[in-house]
Amino acid sequence: MATELSARKAAIKPDVPSAPTPIESAGKLLESSYEQVLAAFGAMGYPVDTDDNFAETAGRAARAMLELVRPVGDIQRELEDMLARTFPARYDSMVVSKHNTCFGMCPHHLLPVVYRVSVAYLPSDRVLGISKLSRMVHLLARRPVLQEDFTHELAEILFERLKTRGSAAYIEGLHLCMAARGIEAHEARVVTSAVRGAFRDQPATRQEFLDLVTAPQPSLL
Ligand SMILES: [Zn+2]
Image: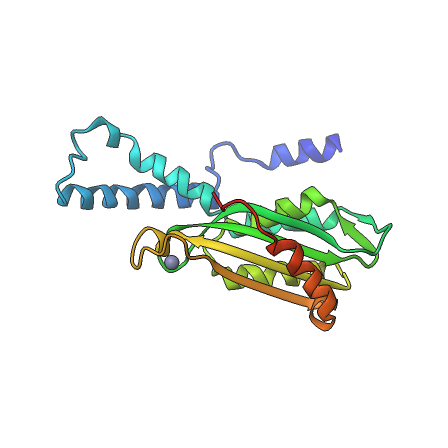
């Protein structure tokens, strides 16, 4: 181990700058883009050059965007990590992670979406820790993808990758592109669901899941 480490250290040439990470590249692009956004606000009459509140805004907005949207490579690595650490299944009954509130991004308007995500699966040989299930949902939300795709991907991963007998995903989305602009449909929720395996083939199993996740709850936020 020690020899491997020193060999690796020796291979690093200190005078050659390392290639920027996806986060660093994206951060620079975003910051200069937000400077343009501020210039546009200036054109609309806002005091972006004289009001101190705007002084650090471009960099701050760039960092905020990088929290809402994570690099594809990072997401894939973290997902593989989670799927690599499963436990032997001791029971075969439904595992449900219900009402995970998480945040994503609409690819059409680049505005945030507040999601309430419920997922379930019927174990075969292996189970995922229940906190992992919730972490997976939060991780996969942080992408500029359609809610429909997000829903089907969750069901697909829990069915195909975890090799379960069936899986389901049910998502309610409050899309700021609908709630804060356009038709200003403040109360409108986009609802999507996806089922695989036993949840698709057995109506009673699907209904049990839907009853669990659609029971009355406090509002989304
Ligand atoms: Zn949108």
